[in-house]
Image (cartoon, rainbow, N blue to C red; front, side, top):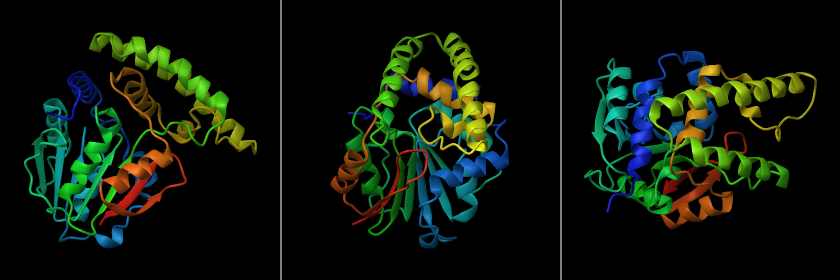
Length: 275
């Protein structure tokens, strides 16, 4: 059985078709990339390495990784996403594109020197099984970088209550027709993401700690990124969240060793090596 949610696959295909990341500046792309890849062991990969981008979406991270390696496999369950990725990455000749679920890639086990999946596997019915599917593709000792939505396990109770309120909004918005959904998530970016992120920016400039200020991650991000993430957050049918402990358990269950978490936003980014 495919480890994917059909409505969620369609939702992301629509998102990347409308927001292909062509308006994301190279400076901001690299900044966000560095947020995710801060703990990735780049010393373990090189020009002879073969890796995979599981749930590649528009290919925004592949554009940075592809020049560093021999070959990169961009895998996504959405044909629309792969279409966008092909266009965005057409200048590269070392990328393979594949439309498939994480558990039915048809690729050989122990094939890859590294892999990463950022903001994808929490949108699948069985996240733990998806991590195991990724592990099977890797050679022994190969690193795997993963980003999963956190369950606010490092935040105060009031922060979690704010999220629960936002879930009520998401429960309505994600069921809307694509065009209306896009308009509403853009509106949410304008009335929620933009003001809160800019307030966080001003508070930080004034010397305050804004770690627990809602949406403070976006204090130095563009409105385009806010629109993208608002669409992710409120427009996606299936979303799950995990604690640091739960993610570590899933990584270890999949056979990863030396599991290490980034202590910086976004939460949680984790890396492990296949045992």
